Each structure stands twice: as structure tokens, then as C-alpha cells.
Image 1 (spheres, rainbow, N blue to C red):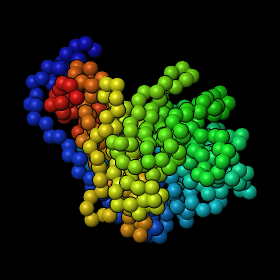
Image 2: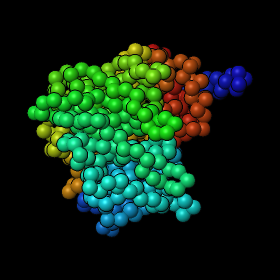
Image 3: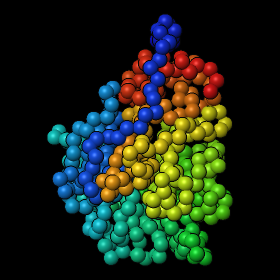
Image 4: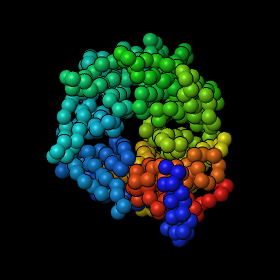
Length: 435
């Protein structure tokens, strides 16, 4: 191993230091969707594969895009029927989908020899109680879908489905014992053996007693409650996790405060320790929808808007997507990303996902809700992309990180071409030194 690293170092220093740095150009994926598709609302990425909820020839579908050295390419389209995919989430060799309307809660697509196929329906365990399915999240072997719970005013419930010997089955219902005046399940995210559920008080309703970022871990029998992370006056409106860290929207003065911040925590043993925050003084008014925030590989990305009513109704024209990277002890914002001219800004940043060396941004309300998904190179939006270990300096440690990821994809793919190779080493050399 020592000899391998030495050889790479010699190659690294001997190569030209002229680097083709990727730009932060924002361009759309094609094709533009049909009216009523809301493309970009249902959006997820895993490694070099992206899934986008669409409408094709009048039927609802999921379009799959693969990223390579030539960029994102539409590879196949799988029809899912007469109900729209409102949220999608990749797991281990499957895609979980929450569906609009009534009936079963969602469906599962899985890769086969003939492509991605609809293989299972996710049943509604109690149609008299559960309705309005809204969000999907997935871990390696589970799908989580939020829905309205008629047993409690305001409360959403999280339905848990897992894949076993008899296929996909409902195995658990996650809901607090009481959610009076509380929006439980307003946002969810999952990764590995971790599930985080957001909960916030309801405006104008006294007595809300459940709020925060509720964390569950996979136990031997089911998903077990670990803790509720709380900060400020209220938090949990928007949440995300990566299996080790949790990030939550927080407020000093209530759930619709104009003084907001994002705070992050790291799981250590069975407790969480704060690892920093990002003040809204740096990025505007608010994050405005679930799925508008993600944390992965030491990077947070989130969509913001410039005013409360615009946050709620898609009408604001001031929408910006940010990335943030931990440099030393502090989170630093990257280059703001805005929608290209000619597209308006309806819903820009409604959903943001990282993968394939790219940042994908959904704008589902564009042009009679046709929707559009935009792409840009992730590293080009970061304040110090080559600082892969977040110590505030680009040095040999980061170079060794690139070597350890050679031939793979992910954060070490600095130029966004879907493979970690010599080009990324050259990018790192060009960034050598303090951030």
C-alpha cells in the first residue's frame, strides 16, 4: 500500500497542473415533462442513478437517468399507472414510491433483466385511518411513507414496510402517543439504520407537546425510538440524516420565524452531540418544503425562499439553493445556485439531491406544473471542494482519500465526471493549501 501511494504521488506531481475546473452552470435534464407531471417533486439519486417522477403520454411514470463521463442520460422509463409519484426514495436495489390519491400507500420498483419493473404494491394497513400519502424515505431494506392519521388532528404517521421472505409487507406504524397541536411527520429522512422524523407545533393551537427531530434506529425486532433532538424555540420542521449525522431546521421564535438556523448533530454511542450550525442571516428566509434539504458525505444542500407566503405557495421569485461544507470547526456556505433565466422560479429547490458528482434541483411547479429538474456540478458549488476531510486545508490527507476512492464516485469525484481518477488529483493539486 505504501508503494502504491508513493507511485501515485510521483504521477501526481509529474502531471501537468492545468486543470479543467467544472463550472457551476445550471442546465435542465431533458425532456421537459407534460402538464401535471410535477417533475422534480419526486426526485432521488443514488450514486450515478437518478429517478424522477414524470408523466408520459398521459400515464404517470418514473424516468431513470444514469450519469457517466458524458453527463446525465435518460436510460429508461417505467410506467406506474394512474396515480402520481409524490415522493421516491432509493434503497438497496429498489425504489420506494409514495402515491397520490387513495388506495395502497405506494409501490416498489426493482431492477430486473428487462429493466426497472413494478414488483410490489405497499398496502394501506387501515384505510379507515390512514390517507393522503405524502413522503417516502428508504434505508437499505425498508421503505417509510408518511400519511395523514385520522386518529389525531394534525398528526401524520410513518408507515414502515420491509422486504422479507414473503416480499414487501407493512411491519410497523410509527406515531407518538399524543400529538395534540403538533405536526408529527412533517418531514422524514432515512439512511442506513437511522430514521429521523420531524415534528413542529401548530400555529394558533396551544398545548403542542411533541416537537423536534425524532430519531429511530433499527433494532432486532423493529425500528426503536432513540431520542428527540431539540434546539431553540422549536425545531424539526425540516430534517435530514446520513446514518451518522442529523440536520434540522431550528428557530428562535416559533415555526414560522424569520430568524432560522440549521443545526447538525453527530451520533456518538446512544447520544447526539452538536457539530455546528448555519444562521439564516447567511441565506435568507426559510427552507420551504420537505425534501428541500439533504446531508451526505459531509455536505448539506438546501433550497430557500425570500418570504413566508412565497415559501408556502410557490409564488416567490426569490429562490436560491445553497450547499454548505464543514471546514474546520464551522459550516461554510458555497456558491448560491439560482434558476436559469427563462424558467421563472416556481418551486426551484423544492427537492435537492446529490449524486454522480452532481447537484440535482427540482422545480415541480414550472409551466403549468410540468416541472423541470436542473443539474450542476456539485464541487463547483462548494467553498473548498478538495478539502475532503473537512480540516480546513487541502493536503496529503485529501490526496490519499482520493486514492482510496479510485475508480469510484462520490465526493472525491471533484470534476463531476462520475469517476475518481487523475483529473480529480489534478483538481486537488490546483487547490493545495488552506481553504
